[in-house]
Image 1 (tube, helix red, strand yellow):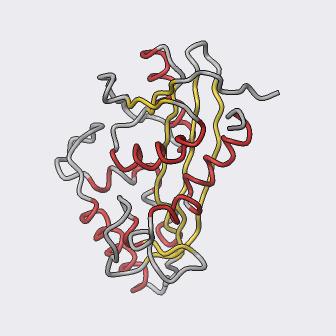
Image 2 (image 1 turned 180 degrees about the vertical axis):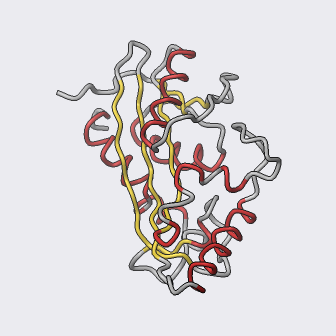
Length: 213
């Protein structure tokens, strides 16, 4: 039987304000008090793994060990078909503007979206016009005693240009999910939270880990 989360406090192992808001909204109905890694002055580890799940495990494990509390970590990104799955696990790195490669470095997702569009344009010039993409999310919940569980989710859609909308974060303004004619950047956050890759992964986690609220 899958271990249930019975503790009343949970660390969100992220310094990304957008992710913190989104995950906090998803956790809130289950009566768990959430504290961020930033509030506990926990440093972000270097993401050295080669998959979303690997990086989520790494971040959750570090936060759980350092805080003595269960820790939930997210690793997510954009995988564009015509770019052979890029930027993938390097989605945040494509937004870096200071060249540091370090967690918490300066990021501008306007720059990242321009790079995606530029590279899609190069592919289209060569006859590869596929603009399909997917957002992928891996969530890891780790306990200080060494237990951990991982769940993955995704949402499929297509890349649009120019970016549209002021909601969300990251690549949201240029991602139009399948079945909709608006981007995540234009979508009401409450609606996005029901269909996003993070919501998909979180629903799987809730079904297995959270006590019924």
